[in-house]
Length: 377
Ligand code: NAP
Ligand code: FE
Image 1 (cartoon, rainbow, N blue to C red):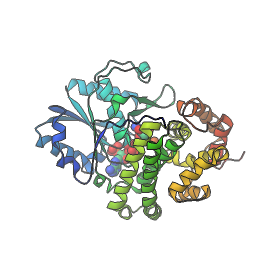
Image 2 (cartoon, rainbow, N blue to C red):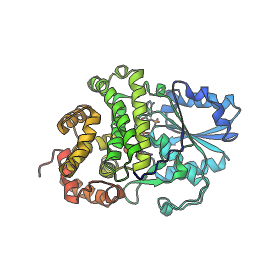
Image 3 (cartoon, protein in one colour):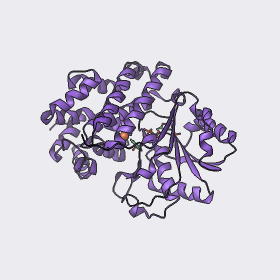
Image 4 (tube, rainbow, N blue to C red):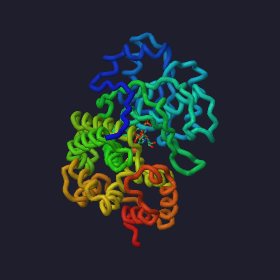
């Protein structure tokens, strides 16, 4: 049984865990940079709790609150310049995957002089600002991964910086910040987490440990699914109570620990074009393709899909398709030209070329897009 398992992030989970563990911040230095999206961190209490903890410890701070969804390379450089100008010792990333990922790139670029054309080459020195992560969506698991995913306009896709130095030193996982997260964002992000766990099991790098984490993560998704199904029609966030929020937070964190070991596969590789060209939310993009990829895998590796379905408490792939369809609703419009373009990009992506137990051909990728978007062959 050969495998490697590496998870260096210290996790504090539970209600009010930031303020209760404010002494943790002190170990990283006397001045912090908070990295957030434009507004949610100010409204959901997460920024307030971080500032309370910093003030308790007498730590100075500055705020960079300009991270957009699907952050750009330019945003990462801007934040890094801000960090350097303010001479901060560490970064506290607060928000969904976008601020957390942008913050990781900023932490790298604040300490190393890297040109944009070399940003994704994997050749980095060890120097990086320490990162503390506070997730406020339950999806990406970025609080426990070594990935920073940025919008890459040169390649017209999303590209990942993957480096062990980007693992956050600490993650504070408190579901209370999600109480007002809209139903649609909750579902899209939860489906992203589910996709991480399922893809982890379909990756050539899956192991005993990553599969155990994936199955436990899927169990939490299943527990929260009925409430998400109830909420989907009404958009009523009160149907997603504290327990559901906590379950989804654990689901996402465990799924992050999975992809930290395995990376993602065909689903993410295909989904990036849906986000880049069609502005479809990251998690939703994956969810629209997930069952299609499982159908392709089922043809040659039926036991793999049976194992995933068992974790979901299902026996047929059609049950899983029905659940995703209920959660995600009507699909967007895609043309056949879109499909051809997106498929060519996907098969060139490392997640397909080098990471799938069942590597789909370009024709199969085409067919998956066609099927997912109800296009006639
Ligand atoms: P996001 O882009 O971080 O946030 C989506 C929206 O939700 C934003 O409008 C944000 O507002 C809002 N929001 C966040 N927390 C909220 C809260 N508690 N209450 C109310 N609104 C809230 O979405 P995401 O799905 O979490 O992250 C997606 C990004 O992560 C993509 O770029 C994807 O590629 C990446 N990703 C990374 C990894 C990884 O391992 N690093 C894995 C998968 C995906 P504000 O902008 O105002 O904050
Ligand atoms: Fe993802």
